[in-house]
Image (cartoon, rainbow, N blue to C red; front, side, top):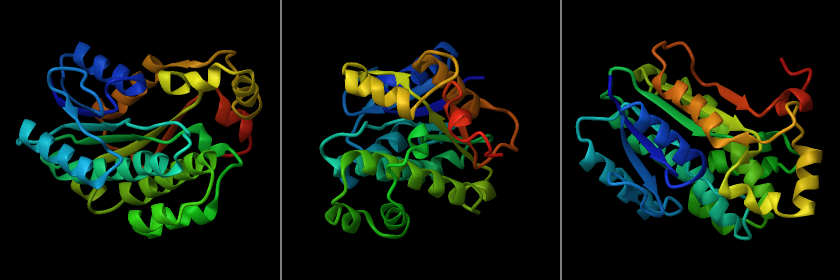
Length: 258
């Protein structure tokens, strides 16, 4: 049965692989990215409130009857502008999920997926920033941000995971029959990670902080397979979970976490 799927970050990496997988399965895909990818795609900048609002309006126009799933995959790696990292990876993801939730609620089997990261396992996490992200408004947080890009990336992913755990079990989500879950990819071969792979320093960092048990980095299609499962699953008992697809990284770094 064909469904209507919204995929952000659909022009590259994991988002592109997920959108392509849905299309092979004959689903209708509404892609969202900063650059155009396909005929049904929406061009929007999710780093700004105006861009997010425009995206939500465009999806409503494209599918006024509702949507069946959201895969909020739009993200950027650590960049010299930490404000952009937080704006897209944290606020952009939440605005996408919350803004499209009313359309999801019109589906008989609504599903939502967002992305954390094995970066939540790294030491570069600032609990003060995590608390601010969960408690304060975007303008206040971004205006006072003084931390480096790596800390912002890791802390933003931790905050997103904590937001998801709270939101997923709420009346607005679970109470409306919407299953909200997340994926935490390990090191995946995507354009976003090219800069890390290209330097000896980057490769050494991966070996130290992101070890895996399978002896290779992941492929975008492997993550897309998990995203598709969460977006299409028929059961309704998987909720509020963060699924690691990382070649064993989380098990290596947290062997006693059960």
